[in-house]
Length: 292
Image 1 (tube, rainbow, N blue to C red):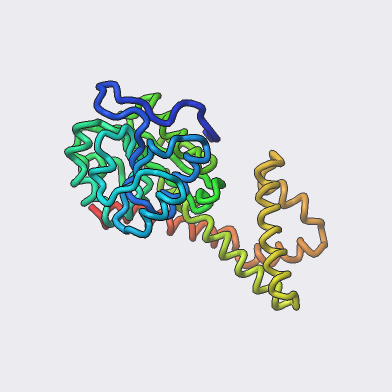
Image 2 (cartoon, rainbow, N blue to C red):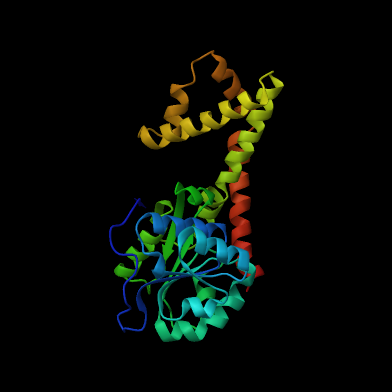
């Protein structure tokens, strides 16, 4: 099921009164967190309700200057009393961060949204002190920085309808959202859309190089390729047609496009892409073991 937005408030007090209404704590202030924070502020969320814990002073200062949000150096100060936590640190440091936050998690029972690849909800729960906290795993992608991303979401059984809606609204600030019912599928989401922008950039690199090899000036090659990819993506989203139908529609028998497609197919493009995505998914699964 694909959901593009949610009109409910992003945060509410916890039912036991332990968490502050309206407070969202970002643990980590890197690019992905910045993209989500920017989306929230653009949608009208009060910057005063957003806290960002970031150890790098220059990053903190930039976030405060650009968005007007609260910034602190340590995770505990940001998380204390917040209704929603967004774990936005690297997978290899997440265990230490969560274990340090375990007392705060017990005190305020927040909704925990993790955007760390490969770290399971069971690991997060254990590191946060157990007790089956409400955890949503989320996998946004790089275009979230422009509000044009897509995020895969998985909710544990402890996430009620209200918390699910809050997570939905939080990530919808960065683009479209897709819920999956099986946590194992988050690795597939990571492999397809999380890593996917790099696949598109790789294709763009190859097309631009080929265009130059055919004699086009670099600026012309770059513009032609970038806008071709943009236009094709818009057709895929806005036309209501699937990719195979659109491809057939622009491939005239015996024409120039058909000649190019034949080369791709002879080179085993479909299998190459399937193998690449599968390897990315396997690596996502391995991250959990690497960081346990």
